[in-house]
Image (tube, rainbow, N blue to C red; front, side, top):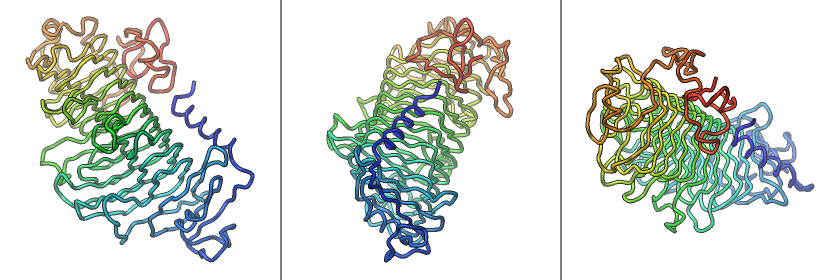
Length: 501
């Protein structure tokens, strides 16, 4: 059975193939070309990608040969459902580089690639790099998609070295940003797959962002790494959309990504000692599935909350992810302070965690903060490090922030020496925690028997107590596949953790 992102992508690709016009033209761009050429062959190629963008129409393809193109690109035309996509892609076997070295940023927020209110665009196989700002009021972006539009595919690109050297909390750069800045028309049916986004210095901003009126998006099979702030972010309530009712990224799929080496430590926009950068963050988004991601060596693994008072991230399902060696919490819900928003209807199931909060921040493996309501934490393996802090519900802002059960907990400490916080009360010992919290009545404190905890392999031994020990909440919540892509339920019942035996 293929994953959801694959099905979406395949459907979009098939639609593209079916609607390509017979009159579609392929043009070529080369560093040795000339804009006085006709662009119809590699020997008569145009010189600039922007020149090609100014001349293509729906159904056309632009093949860009390898080499460095020191220019920004704005795509001023749309493809269509009838005539086909406008496609910009690398010439076979070659990698074109759009390089921002020495280029000024016109003002405000601007990208090496800009797609504003266009539809049916494919952009594939490029490296975009070296776009830098030194000023707080100027924001450099690698790929910047804005306005309203449909069926935009960003595929198999590498975005790197997008940098701000400004300081303070108004300093920003963005690797890849989808900003739905119109309403009620949205940015919709967005596909972001197979990309690498690395070596960014984004100040207070993110590596990959979906913000405002963005409806229906897929973020899959990407590698996001070695950046100094949040890896993937789905945002709401920032005022990006001109109408509040549409100001929320929604109906998203974040799956099968590798997110690692993400930390705000050393980021001049944050105070020293702030382990604040999420691998995956839903900040006010809704109706999003986060599944089968590998998240490691980041600050916070996966967080779902809202930074705006009275608002929440809601109806998020986080399942079958691997999260290990984080600097702070493995999974976190609820707002970071009493004056911000929270989390509602978050289902966290069948994840495998190992030795997060490595910097001993006191966040623990599963952290519950302010204003958390109607949440579920079940069928997870939670393996803590030396501080043995497994659940950290450190506020009394809501009396029942989550339902926890059918989990496996473990740490190097014995069960009666393990650490828990429930409703702002510190508790020592697993049994004492179960009694005080009235949670986890079917859970176990036992070694899950991971295959390896040194070079992490979070599959479990056949003898593990995780096998057939979970609570099957149904395919809508659990999903059809485990982390490895196998059927989610095998044997007599669902397993606990990200893998199924």
